[in-house]
Amino acid sequence: MNEYLFVYGTLLGGAPDPEVNRVVRSHCRDAGAASVAGRLYRFDWYPGLVPDREDPPRRVSGRLLRIQAPERCWPVLDAYEGYRPGAPDKSEFVRRRIVARREPEGEALEAWVYVYNGATGAGRPIVSWPSPGRCG
Image 1 (cartoon, rainbow, N blue to C red):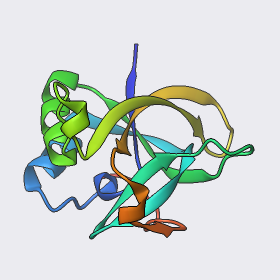
Image 2 (cartoon, rainbow, N blue to C red; image 1 turned 90 degrees about the horizontal axis):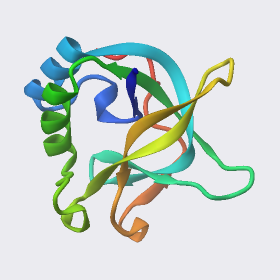
Image 3 (cartoon, one colour; image 1 turned 90 degrees about the vertical axis):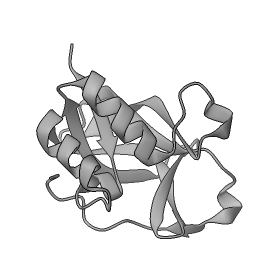
Image 4 (cartoon, helix red, strand yellow; image 1 turned 120 degrees about the vertical axis):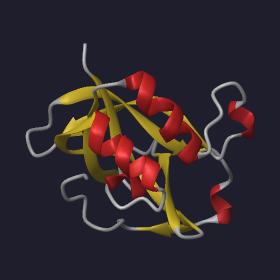
């Protein structure tokens, strides 16, 4: 079974951490454009996704990555995103499963995503992050 990660921000390419970029290039494969129900907020210099429960929901565009080596990817990506699996309440982001829709055909699939875990009042709503071009 394939394991996917939906990326929408700095993981689209050019993360400021060289180890993160190496892991994405080495152990993840671009699986195409997608979107998820949510809103983006700017926190300092990076975006954070908050799931949207409106009907119809707003959509955030990004890319799907197929994770080829989860045991090598998750520790590095979790640390970069400030996610502590053993202490999610103390994490800036949490990794959750979400329904992503491939673009443009709309096929739904389950993917992991890093969701902002704090108060949205600390950020500013943003319409979109830089273009979700090819990863890596």
